[in-house]
Image (tube, rainbow, N blue to C red):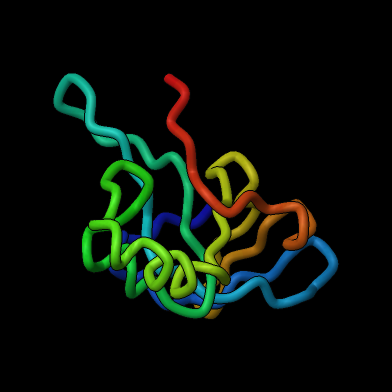
Length: 109
């Protein structure tokens, strides 16, 4: 698989195994352990404004903002890195149907 820098992935469109558009790469989920970074997956969708405010799955928003930020994240989906089958200059190809993608990422390790 072609190697890309993280910044090159952001904004690339994501295409599922059926050739359907799943959105674009909004964020990259990584784990830092023992001095090494491991890519866990990609957040895809229309925008990631709520995540850019710092309210991902690890930080709960203040009560008045919870519904608004949830609404802003309604199109976000998570692609596990193992489901990425190809990195092209203009797109990321995934080996699953985009409708089966979960809405949130989980680090179960």
